Image 1 (cartoon, rainbow, N blue to C red):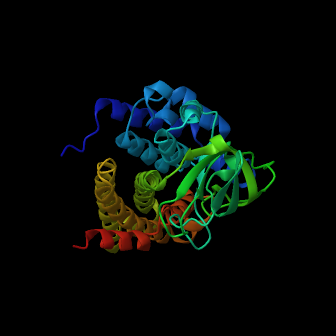
Image 2: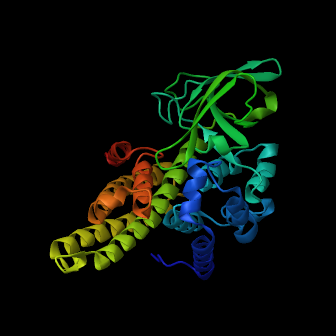
Image 3: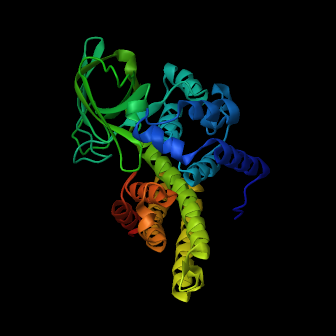
Amino acid sequence: MDFNLNKEQELLRDGLGKFLATRYDLEKSRTAAKIGPGWQPEIWRALADDLGILGAAFPESVGGIGGGPVEIMVIAEELGRALVIEPFIDTVVVAGGLLQRADHPSAAALLERIADGSAIVVLAGTEPDNGDHAVSTTAVRADDEWVITGNKIVVTAAPLATHLLITARTSGEPADPHGVSLFLTEFDPAGPPPGVEVHGYRTIDDRRGADITFDGLRLPVDALLTEDAAGSLARARDEGAAAVCAEAVGSMRKVLSDTVEYCKQRQQFGQPIGTFQVLQHRMVDMYMELEQSVAAVYLAVLNLEAEPKVRARAVSAAKATIGRAARFIGQNAVQLHGGMGMTEELAIGHYFKRLTALQYEFGSTDEHRARYTKLTRP
């Protein structure tokens, strides 16, 4: 099997890497996250206008470049290396995938807006105590409207969104994967419509999220995007999980590189601490965890278009591997940097927070271990 990128994919990686190295300043990004709007809109527009990567996995008919899972992997890894907080995975990978699989007249137009940077679409799918899979939020038909009632938590990037994709049950019990429909609505977190309450916050890794309560939100009949969305939602979550795994690889590459460089410069007992054999062994262990993670991401990405059980097994293997590696590499990087590893001034602390959060996105390490075990039983 050939794991080498083709010429176009190499150009995509190199172009994005150069853009982020010259245009994406970590200090400016953290300032926007902490006391600003939570992101840099001008960077998002540049990703669309200058690089065209917001349509990387979309067909050319909606302004995309016709790429696939490998292109998403390449982009996500570079975004992870630069610690980009803009909602690429939430909007392009997860919401974009759901829209592409929806047989709805408004889907193509919204994909065009995502590709040109004018729309931020996010999925509101996680509920209290139910995770991503059980859905208690209900959608009841009332004449020519749908009435939605329920709660969603940790809706990543919701404070930045222009549109929401809402999972709501139209039939069946909460644990039944079928009977869950997907609804599309315009969204303004600063001025939500009647029946919607938004509680926004900054997450530990300097991103924006929100808990959203729907108390009789009324939507028109044509807001129903997909009637039975179970299969599409399962695939979207696996695609999101694979993308955050690729992002984690980019972050871990940067963390390991910075740690090795620091150990070459930091002096103790009159010599660089990188010459101490015990620390060399520690960094080799970090490198081995990184290489296992790279292989696991390849496995997941190359199986995203396989049949559902094969796809799910490969993604869970990658997510469990990445979860272990992110924890090991992040903690050891901080320890090798000493107390300054957790300061705001040093980049390593910001990467550590992101690597910690990545372990729980689209299912925790333990959840994916359990799913992998279930899927490999005879």
